[in-house]
Image 1 (cartoon, helix red, strand yellow):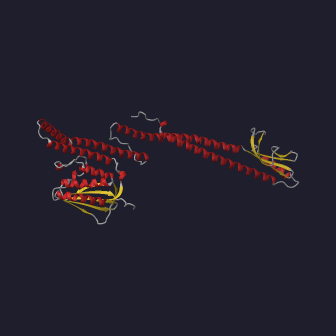
Image 2 (image 1 turned 180 degrees about the horizontal axis):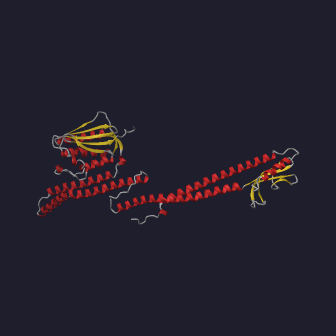
Image 3 (image 1 turned 45 degrees about the vertical axis):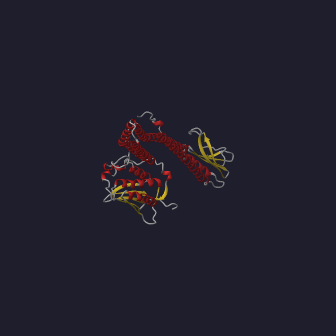
Length: 459
């Protein structure tokens, strides 16, 4: 059953999870790079502000033609930082050092960067310096970048470890989620395999959380329910065909054998031929009705649907069958609201056939003196077509069965017919989204066809 099952690495859910994990990690890296750059720029700005502020504090101690206070201030600041994280240099115009803990040479005015080589300081330590002229002297204040670089390194390491952790978590989480989804897809595949092997009762298991897979599984299960019902119906139809057509076929065979015997003795066989023709015609009509029902259930006629007035169809059927009912000792009347139009969306020919079958069914199975009535009414968003009679009716426990193909009541087996008239009525109703109900008319039967109300043409 699991042959051909894709591995987790090749499964679509895992690939999707891996893709989203990659996009998530990429977004994390990009956001980290932006944050790092903003932080680095902010640290550089703050360092420059600190350097400029320290420079201003030292420079303000200078008085004109009196640089002793300036020299003392520079030396005091230099002695406060034995680790030389901060450097101070005061030189004269010839470049001779007057004060400080290093000698600045060749540095331009303003901010600059340089690598210092000083005793007790790691080689090539980078400093950020600010230089300017105080009187006839050159003052330079420089701060080491080691703390800033150390902080940036810590941030980079944190982002690096965070990226590794998030990558691992995303892949593991994606694999876990993908495996759960894959198990559910495997359940769907296993159900389809069971169905393909003829086990039509197999259904896709649902977990009940209402997600998209559950929604699709519910639709597939509904389709399998319908498929199972159709297959069961076909089996039942096959059995019914074999049972109900066996008698007319045997009767046809007997008639032909009688005709053959009479032909051998040179007797007249016209009566047998007429009976054989009637039997074959009845058999052909049965198969034609079965094919017509199959075509209707397949929905092939929906392309001919239009918005039409069902009261006009009811009125036409009433006029056509009124004389037929009278000749048969029954009466047929129509009860329609004058000038009222009840629109539905459907196929006129099929609706004519549907109502004709209902009327013919009442005429065939009701005794002389029966009154049959056709009417149309509107209830909310439904259009109801009623076919009433005061005949013998149908027992309540038989009302659902009469819509089955070739099903006939015991009381009607002596009357002509194939048992397909109401099956065709049900097929036409289903095609139009209508419902068919059989209810007591006290006495008799009322058939109620309930259609979704349509719009008037151009409305």
